[in-house]
Length: 232
Image 1 (spheres, one colour):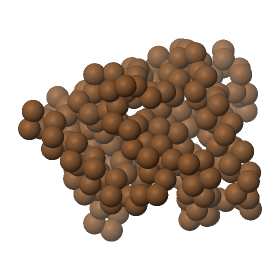
Image 2 (cartoon, rainbow, N blue to C red; image 1 turned 180 degrees about the vertical axis):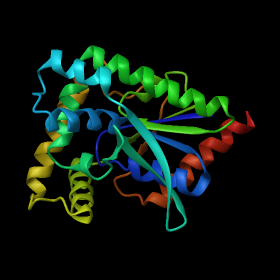
Image 3 (tube, rainbow, N blue to C red; image 1 turned 90 degrees about the vertical axis):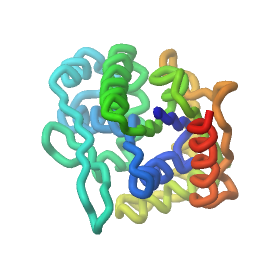
């Protein structure tokens, strides 16, 4: 089974996907991490976000891997770039806007989508369920996914969640809630107006508003959808 979860930042996509991986042994692909990894490498090499020629050169040699490891008895996924674990680094505040801009480059998008499909199809080939989360999973990457979900939430709530996440990671950099709200609103605007891979909700996606709901409640609803599909 292929499960796609789309939605803007701070709606709970990553948290929910990780829990499905930990508790239900569903393979998890964080597609946004791929763009963040590329953005991170561009920053490390002094390449500007609009320098398409050099970004594409970087892309030709980049090696992005999802590596499973056991932490306190849990199987977690790390993002490894050219042999280095960058799971924490790519969640820095300065990475997200660069990743969003880079993802607008058509050739970058095509490369990443192809890679995402290859990884997911390999899991399915081996008889495993896979969950992909991002912004264009159900519209571009896997428009025929078995289960398509769109998560949403109030902007202020999303900003509070994002700020709390940054604090927990120790990378909040004294940012205020207002600054996070502004950053999220800019990101939303960019994501919704991309020429390719724009963030949008489709009619056949299960819409879930996570504003006033806890994670367990949302997971229970998604599990219900999974069971419904399996019975069909």
